[in-house]
Length: 274
Ligand SMILES: Nc1ncnc2c1ncn2[C@@H]1O[C@H](COP(=O)(O)OP(=O)(O)O)[C@@H](O)[C@H]1O
Ligand SMILES: [Mg+2]
View 1 (spheres, rainbow, N blue to C red):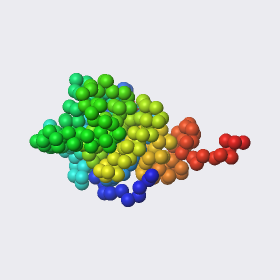
View 2 (spheres, rainbow, N blue to C red):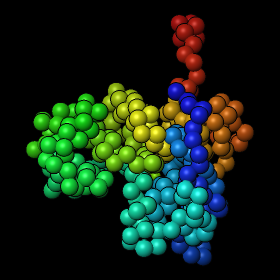
View 3 (cartoon, rainbow, N blue to C red):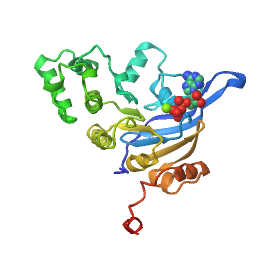
View 4 (cartoon, rainbow, N blue to C red):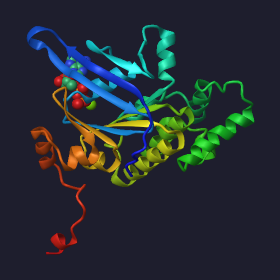
């Protein structure tokens, strides 16, 4: 699963910090964080609830300003100071949040959702037939039939169909970076595996970098090239999945690992049959 030949660093941060509130009520949600994300790399950011994962993701997405620190994008200091610059930055980045409903405008039918992706990719002037082909391709990638969906509203889809539609969108937009904030926690284990497989397939297809935000060590171990462990806003552990999860250095990681079932260990039949 783990791919060693990831590409160049294209997104990084130095001293990234975000505080909320003042004085006695001050929370340092993200505290002096450094990271480097490479093309095609799969990164997991693991931490308990309240450790600052979503705040970090929002700063990377440009939805929240850092209190201190810098984000670098493609070798330059990221500049999203104007509407036009933000829009340009967002062409490179997509996010999946816990609740798939929040991704869609509920008054747009599925074909409008997909047509919007074509427009965002600069394909607004394509012929009807060409647009139709692109939408069909994207649905095929996620094993959905465009004909069955095109006339429906997002709320008429099942949870699984909605997740797939979300991945079809990403397939069409082919961002350089996808941030998935606990994307699979609301679906069952079976469709969870399917969604993960599709995301990994997508990584191969378009050399996308994926950042998974999760509290699931087993998932992080299974899918990641690089793992960051976060405790109260601080990155306390960082390394390959093997380094960070099988040979952790920090006490915090060791404690976290002690709290979860060890599904990342090879299955020991002797133990279970005894
Ligand atoms: N908008 C906000 N205003 C005040 N405090 C916030 C805000 N967003 C997050 N926090 C606080 O920052 C800390 C980190 O939160 P968050 O990034 O949501 O953690 P996680 O995603 O790891 O659960 C928490 O203590 C949370 O209460
Ligand atoms: Mg969160």
